[in-house]
Image (tube, rainbow, N blue to C red; front, side):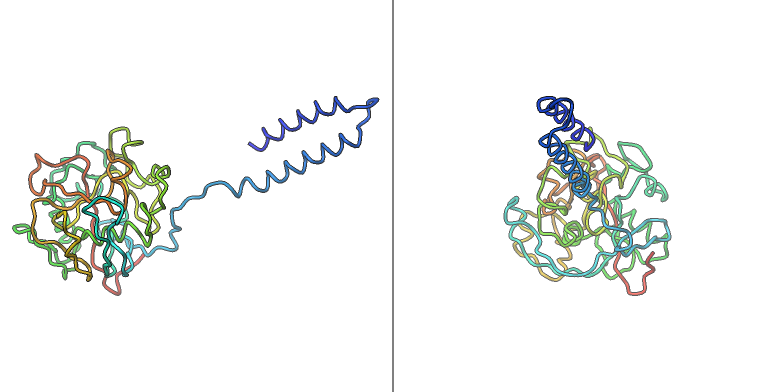
Length: 316
């Protein structure tokens, strides 16, 4: 780019030089003009590299990572508090309310079909590829995977598969609560997305309706959020532990907001390959009825797992 601009300016100089050439000698006016062009070119060479866009993905050295016994990379989400919901979004996102969250581990990537196939579970995914997220997974399939992964690592499983009830004191794998999911997605931000408010940048972080070409993609190809989570705004929507309710935030409790206990749908969060700009926002909520019916399962829904943080957990 610098070369092209300089070349054009030098062409102008030559033209200008012809206009002010006297007896084949360069005039003072011509020499002054050439010096200005050179100075302008040097300034461009210095300034333009500084304007180049840099990646927002955090350096690995700033993250606390763990490689599990089953080979899954997890990142530590530090405990804290945040204002959950949005006063300018959909009605079910209001009111904004303060929630405290304890530290926990979260999968950096959505569970892939390769990871899902490690256990004796049928893979119903539509877009077959080992590195694509597992999808068309109903909620019961997701919690069964959590238990299988826990058994494989000699951890205490969290779920009673008969009732779907979660033991939050167990040290095994589970789905994130809705509050944990939004807290991790926001990663300390208060903007529409974890990278700011600019919709035009969504394609740098997510596969969604405008760039996914009607399908899922291998996990981890886009930029991560500030806490190192990939595909949190897009690729597939993600199951949470909670039942979905349009009025859940009205009576929400501040302490960790563990779960709503009744309902006909479970919460899904995040954008999917078919999602709009709006439904990829950090605060966007939705529910899905495919709790235990594979016939209702959607190829836009997958999941990632979390695990309670216990001091002394091995970090990479």
